[in-house]
Length: 439
Ligand SMILES: [Zn+2]
View 1 (cartoon, rainbow, N blue to C red):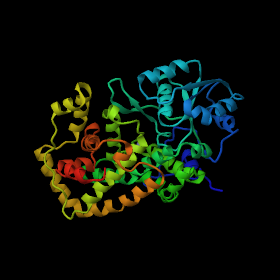
View 2: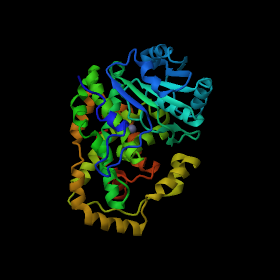
View 3: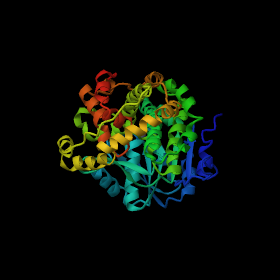
View 4: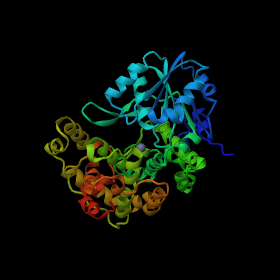
């Protein structure tokens, strides 16, 4: 029988030390359990966390059926339980957070039963009022369960990752995840495929600008990534085994943050594309989820990176075209100025561009070789994602070509994290790439 918790147990217990510094992780949670089933064990698992006498079990219309009702039933021996079922199609925004705060106000702690948005809403709500929470994951749809940040949409529409807190416990029932609609696990796979694109962006940034980099998050998943990729097609068949492989990579990826304090190892250019879509696509983006967007963006960025890395001579950049009034015209007054301030920090003026070109030219042969070891073949990535049932193009995501090109072109606006999107656009190569890339 597979031990789904190997390595994860050691990290949570503080027994795994990094090869880089010999340090253990600062793990904010007390328990992570991945089991083929948790049915009946819910109270035993939650008891050591001492969450309090009154628990609010929060699910939504979909996850209540799948698992929420069962968790609530089994926790009744442990505490007074109030079941709260939120509507489906939630957004983690201020009105939703206020509603969850109001509806859970009598509880000492919150037990979330769900995935992305529901988990983030409970996370952020309890962070704001200082209560504890734990999560029962219902799908392998993203790697954010273990993150101490929450993805929140502000009142002005700006979607951002805000500091929050980590769950006391994360409990993953593989049979439940395997039963969930397969587009959810395909989305989780999409979110995992960014390992290579993010590593290339992050390492290149480290070498070119001396920014912080750590190999620890990649060492954590190195043994698990191949098995996850190999079993990806079985996600489409509701395989428990494939869901376990995927949950391990998602969880270990989340644990990377406990060693570095930053999310860069799994969130670079491809995530900026996803954030841009969430923030600006509006009704032109028909409810696609984070992992689906990241999957498609990872494939496109992998193709772009491969193209640039195939060049014997590095691209030459020009001073960055960055004009505040254009940001305001694109995004409106408030968000336009926020994005401009972020993007301005990584932009190049004439002198900066010249210095960058000089550095890149000197470093290029070495850098290409270093980055080569992080590359995943974009064609293989695509067939893996397709086999799992995930969308692999903007068209399959239901996005127009124009919207997709804008997302890829302007994704660099939303965050001060330099990536190959910045390199390609400053070098004047991005428009041409987007005109002929798969969409
Ligand atoms: Zn992600």
